[in-house]
Length: 610
Image (cartoon, helix red, strand yellow):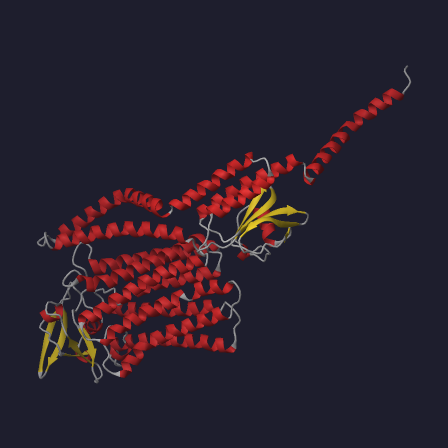
């Protein structure tokens, strides 16, 4: 089961990386001019069906260069399918788009070739798209790490699917290809990804807390509004493809609405997200105790991040200025990136992943990726300026050479970046781990059990950030806390407790939250001696709420093993009840072995001498 899920999620991650790659190639170009073009103007609806006007084209932009002026009328019914799609979204930068334009009583055809992201005010064009791509990379990274490390949790698998579905946001209108049918199909795929992610979020929230009739009503409302968002996208695609219906009222964003009816449809996707947030809030409110905070961190960040990005994107409909419109799109991309970071942190609060570990890996991967992207961007800039007369073949050869050089040096770059990030971010962690490992060896030379226990608690207090810790030692029929710190409550635990049995059986650290157990904490570690569970080291939640990292768990496991062995040895030296019992058993066994010999001697002694 887990293997199938892992293969599925990792395959989807690989597919998502391909989408990100093609999106980057579409926007930034790969050995030539990018496909994706920009109108450098905004589109505004009118009171007439199918009719739009060109608003405030930039003087140095593609629309103005084609002879289109502010206020020119574009009727969708007079355009080809490709021109309709291009005018509503974005056009190609590698081939002209023929647009039928009306100016008063005049009617003419304008051939418009879109500008690239590097022509004109590039920051307004590239920043938002780049931020959205980085956000998707964050989501893919989180999904991949869940697939590799936390597939036992159903909630984690659902979250991973939601994160993977965010790849759909890069399909349209960010990705533009020279095929009209494929462009429309990508619109539907994007809408389907949005619908599936919203339904999965509602389904996930329904698994937490008690479900009252009012809460079920909110859930069905969220399902209905999410489905309505997909229907809206489907109607807009049908309208663009067939002109059976006016597609303009159903497009969000991209076309500025001048009447209330299209604006109402524009707000509907935000209403769906707000309904999903309401479902999550109801789920959090219906949970109790310590689970409430974990539920909040799991359910709320994703829909809040999506809603914030949608609201910022809708602000682009408030002004016809191209700069304000593009600035709002940039803001939406940056909010998506911020949401990706918050969602990543939220997953770590749920103990799905380790915060510092994923932060370090993310920084390493992001830095290496940034080096690669900057190298290709600089090459494209060089080919477009200094080597402006270079042929397409020259561009391909230059990109291939750069890719070869980066491929050969990527391992070296990754190693250097990894070393630097590790030294900067995790110095304190490594010092704490070394201190725990050192004491695991030093414990064998402690000659007093009380001093050993006191020193153990002091090491945990100084070299972990747990809110509390306890040592539960084996007593007759139970494990009882004999040393502890923090505000936690450490009741005696039966030797037949579910978590205790797992510690005895598997000799591995475990999370008590996954068991029906009297152990209260975030991490339980076995303290073993000669295969016997002599004690349990129990750690409370970390001060920051994150998970204990794999490196920390490994160091704590060795620490617990060293202390457990030393504790068992001191028990034998002290001659406690168990040691006395073992000694008595050894003496009895020796007597039993010597019994035949003693009987033979006694018989020989009593028999008369011949």
